[in-house]
Amino acid sequence: MKKSLILPLFLYIIIFFSNNLSYSQIGGDNTYEFLNLTNSARIAAMGGDFLAIKDNDITLALANPSLITKEMHNHLALSFVDYFSDINYGFAAYSRTFPKIGSFVGTMQFIDYGKFTLADETGQKYGNFKASEYALNVGWGRELDSSFSIGANFKMIYSALESYTSFGIAVDVAGSYHISKKQFTISFIARNIGLQLKSYRTGNSEPLPFELQLGLSKRLKHLPFRYSILITHLEKWDLTYEDPNNPSGGTDPITGEPNKKGGFEEFGDKLLRHIVIGGEFLITKNFSMRLGYNYQRRQELKVDSKLSTVGFSWGLGLRISKFHFSYSRSAYHLVGSPNYITITTCLSDFVSRK
Image (cartoon, rainbow, N blue to C red):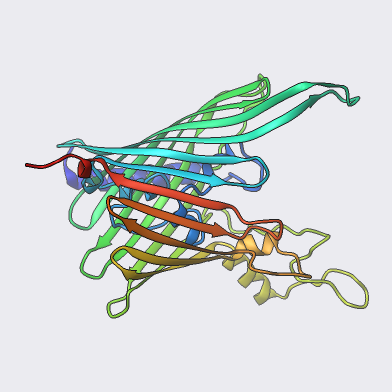
């Protein structure tokens, strides 16, 4: 297929699926929600979700396959997240490039929900059980020219919750525009287009967490700093959720009733829930510091009596010899902050070259 036809066809696929799946909801209305968990420590440090930074980082490919490049060839990445309670999750990723076909990244995602007590409705205990989910991802990326690149992830999903099991498939499609001289990148992504092949219960098929995303990044010319702006859930405008015990507008000190937001305030609140901002201080070639802020996360999980740093995140990137280590913490709630650890390396660096 000619390169001139690939980009129009790719954009048509994105538009077609976005028009047909825009009814999708968020907030627990979908199955396989673990697909949306942030895996990369770098992404988590800069607000979570995904990034539009084209610098050959294999850990960004799972969330944005249009960033897959031939420079990732023979790169390996391992990521682990110490989540809440006994929940742990992460991934292992490896990349290969084949001439005339493109570059591929194979990734195995997992999440272990820990051990649970098996009991009936009367409280009678029958032992323990475990719950876990997995996704095998095959990502493909190709540069159409010096500026445009496209990519896709194909996902095979397996979920086991006690005696209930489910299988599903999904794809992500993405496109990026990159200006190397200005170090500017913008990406558009359609995530989790798919369906359940086998539901947990017969006749009870559930939708996947489909989402449209837009992101951009820019490194400043005279400062060692890169900023990132992400726009999430383009398919759904209103992401608000009103908790009667913790209203977003606060409560009236006299009546105790929830305060209603005005027109402009309400519009601003809904707009900001789509925006995630992040920054990366590139102090040296081998060391960087990262910060992020997720407005929606703060509004949904904050406690008015003690706001703390909910919604904020931070992290470090450090290169030592042949390894690149990333660590981050993301404040979800007062009860704690998950730890993200990611290690990447290029296996070719361990092969002696004569």
